[in-house]
Figure 1 (cartoon, helix red, strand yellow):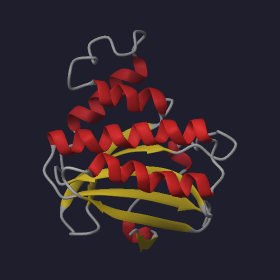
Figure 2 (cartoon, rainbow, N blue to C red):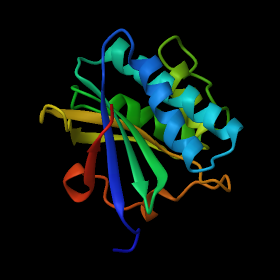
Figure 3 (cartoon, helix red, strand yellow):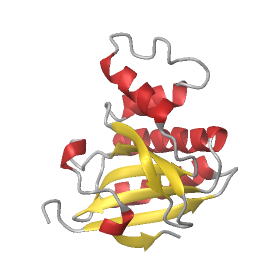
Figure 4 (cartoon, rainbow, N blue to C red):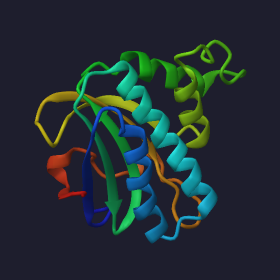
Amino acid sequence: EPGGDVVLLVASLRPGSAARRARGLLRQPLRAAGVPDDAVHDCEITVSELAANAERHAPPPYELRVFLVAGVPAWCEVVDADPEPGKIGDAFDRLSVTTEPGAGLLAENGRGLLLAHRLSAGHCAAYRTSLVTVDVPGKAVAFTLPSPAGHRPAIAALPPTRPDQARLRRWT
């Protein structure tokens, strides 16, 4: 397979502590892969914002999913039980083409997405998916993760991100 062996790490995130748990879980595989500390910190902030947004705006359950490609973390998703990614995808699209980053999106409910977009260098997306832990429709808000050298894979170059196309490993 072109992208190498794909392993999906998945963990449930409890309402009330989703952001804290997501941050702590993401830290370990990034540090183990040798990602620089400043990039780990940016990813922790990004996943924390996305998990907090999920808790604030979408119904539970919530999941954190990290795709490892050939042992290296490549893609992170925060998944919730709202199957409609429309507004989030639209916000990311607008942020990708605007010349004034955050100009209309810095309203109270847009700061987390703006931060996620900036910290992931625009390598973020929202799309429909299904939760792995309970098999219900949902949406993923995702971003690519930096490699140990600091580069992020192009979204098109990532392997399929459907859980049924990856080896699943539950996180504890």
